[in-house]
Image 1 (cartoon, helix red, strand yellow):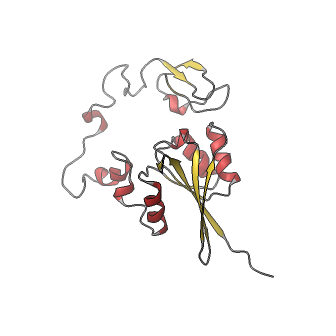
Image 2 (cartoon, helix red, strand yellow):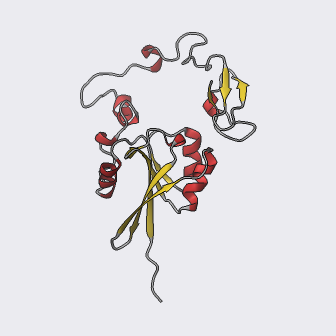
Image 3 (cartoon, rainbow, N blue to C red):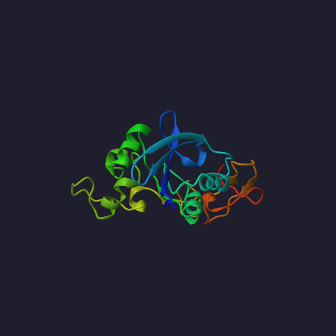
Length: 193
C-alpha cells in the first residue's frame, strides 16, 4: 500500500495581480498546492460569500493550511486561526513575486510588508526604526487617543456602527470599538458609519 503524500495548500488573497490590500473584502484566491517530494500546482478560485465566517469556511473547505494576505480584521483573523489555518498578514506586492518569495522562504522581508504597517512595529517598540536611533512616540504623544469624542479617542467617540453585510445600523457604544461588535442580525463585524 502506497503512503499518501501530504499536500500543503497556501492561499494568497488576490486583487488585480497583486495581494489584495484588505482580505475582509477580497473575493479571489490563488491557491498554491505543494506536494512532498516536489511538484507545485497553482489554482485561482473565487470565494463564496462575503461574511467573515463564510470566508473562513471557504478556506477550510479547500483544505488551506496557510493564508498570505494584506490587512485583515482581528475578528476574521481569529476565526481563521481558530480553524487551524496559519495567517501571514500585512503582505503586499505583485502576487507572482510574493509566491516566489514564499517558495524561497523570503516572505518576511520588508519589501513585502504593507507600507506603514506592522513590519516595522517590532523595531519601533524597541526604540529603533530601520537601524537608526530615532525613538517612536507613544500614541498619545503622536496625537492619537487625545481629545474628547474624536475618531481616535479612547472611548471610540460617538456615532453609529454599520454592518457591511446587511446594512443594519446601531448606536455606537462608548468604550467599545465598532470592529469589536458583531451584527445582531447576520453576525458580520461592524464598521464605523
